[in-house]
Amino acid sequence: MPNYRLHERIGYKVSLLSRLMEARLENMMADQGVTRLMWCVLSGVGLEDVNTPSSLAQYIGITRPAVSRLLRTMEHRGWLERAGHDADGRGIAVFLTDEGQRKLFACQPLVDELNAHFTDKISKQDLSRFCALVDRLTEDEKAPLTTL
Image 1 (tube, rainbow, N blue to C red):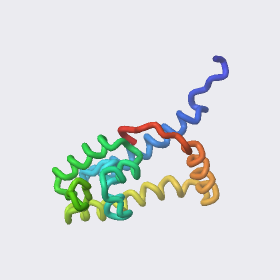
Image 2 (image 1 turned 45 degrees about the vertical axis):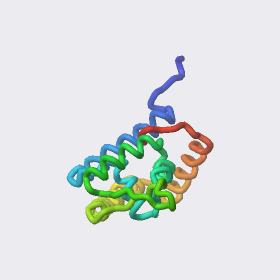
Image 3 (image 1 turned 135 degrees about the vertical axis):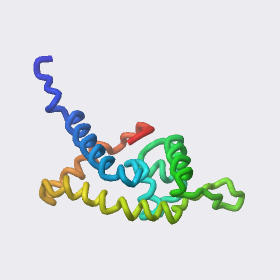
């Protein structure tokens, strides 16, 4: 394939951007002991009222078993609690503890800083166009992910 250029491929470009953002965020939140996926749970439960394991899996874009493992870890650390929430007790609701709330509010400015670091590099119009194009590229893609 004489025309193949790795660094010109969309997969390479979006993977590179994703890994750069992931590494930067993980480094920024390291002192809090919070990973990127843990942040997704904290923000989902604490900021967007996403409070069941299944809805968290859908919200984050990972499988239900992956969310269950993540919730177990976070529950063990004392950041969240799970409790029955329907009449027969089989449905599970997820709640942040005081420590979970503290982690949420400690990390939110870091996430905002990361977002600003990258979005400030381009115009608002380019950012809007970029997000719309990414949405179009991911539309109808339903591959189950164990991590994001």
